[in-house]
Length: 201
Image (tube, rainbow, N blue to C red; front, side):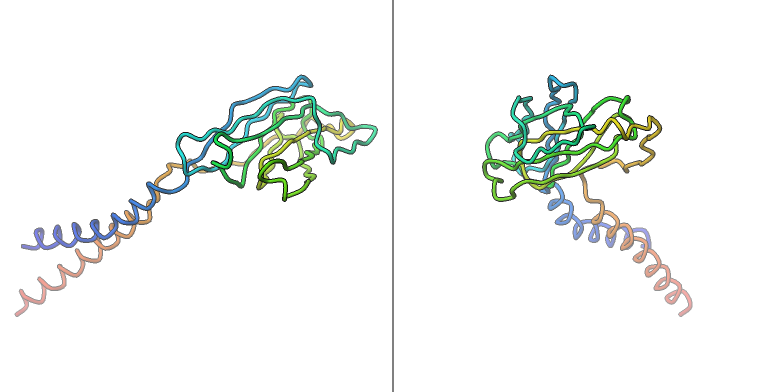
């Protein structure tokens, strides 16, 4: 009797958790672009979000530069790219831009000049800086754009490495399962208390 009652309560808890799992299955998907290498040597990969499984992010090398590019005597452009989505407007940010500029620039200060275009032109221009780590530079932005990256060779140290770690993303919200598991545990305790009272009587 105890096992049957516990099983029934657990089944009910799991049924209540299903709407949460169904919601998770409809959550935004990550979309990743192709990796494109510019003539100056740097490469770029972009990730964003989409609700359309057919959408794509595209990165193309270009000779154009972002309109806000302003270089010091020690800065060197290592790549310039155009980023857009297909169909237009089918993805959204925040977008993560990961540049590979080479380990020879480890420790250097990289500057990314961003000129938002098309549907995101209202975002204007941005200038972001980051330190080259393991040959990579990572920044985030809210719109698609023309991006130009420059590295300051005078700041190279060659000693910077990326020691950060990221938990794996499964794409499934486990909240519902956690709630159901907790409910089962509580139910089992409750059944035990009830049965002990009955035996005591």
